[in-house]
Image (cartoon, rainbow, N blue to C red):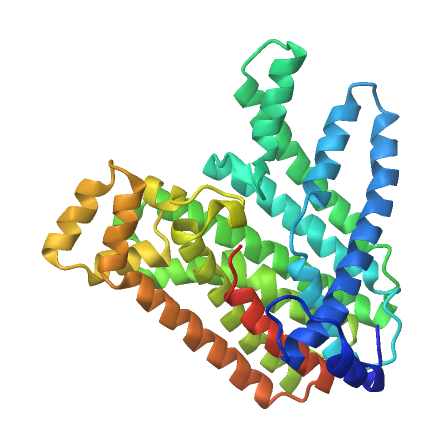
Length: 380
């Protein structure tokens, strides 16, 4: 990447995208994020090519499975987690350090993310992801096209679980390719393992909420957001990057990363809740209203029930079996959508306040300020 002098020049001169205007935050992100994502994608492609070839040597039938696993990883995505991990590392280590030694560790987070997505899609019975069929749906279609016996849906789900498991193993393998000093290795691994535990815990709470809605609440919905999304999307990647830089856990910067990460991560999930109901499927790559249709106890739906008048609550219950568009209108009428927007703004404000007092590298501060807005005020 760049040292501070080059970064300052990038802020002034980086090409901007439509809508960037003269915003220096967007300019520096345009200059650096693209390069980082390209480096992560290249690392993943090289790693996966060798892994897929190795799987192919086991049996001729492994080709489709290996290709499906590879495509699940490389088939789009924002690379948000490696980006936050990079800026966590950069903010702690400063400018001038080469990226190559830690790049495999950053890219490994994308494999961890794929594990979570593929399993999540099976658990939620989702049919599309990033505008394409989810892994288990695509695999069921392959089962039918091949004329295999048995239940295509069951086959697709079973193989998708294996793909998710494989991506978890691949993440460990790729992480092992990073050049990490022995003195740092324990803390790096501890942070990485905690990220995985938090992800599983959040996913379980998500499943539990769907099956025990009578005992759910706004507070528990926010707890799901904290563990299922905030921890492994923003907070833990930032701390993971800091660990790669050798930053001790009991420092002011680590504390700031924790506060910033939880706030931005929760806001990220709250934006997802809104996009899942009111977003444009052409932009999100997923149908609108799935969470409402299934009655998933998101913060948005929990707030709608909490804020509804008795008449609105009755209407919400009656509309559950009707068109999802009407249900979305009723949720908005309770004021819940507006309240979620305020919660997002409050959390972004908290994140920026944490950065203001943090002893963080100046370029990283600029980037993290921009990321707080970009990650929580998006269309997809």
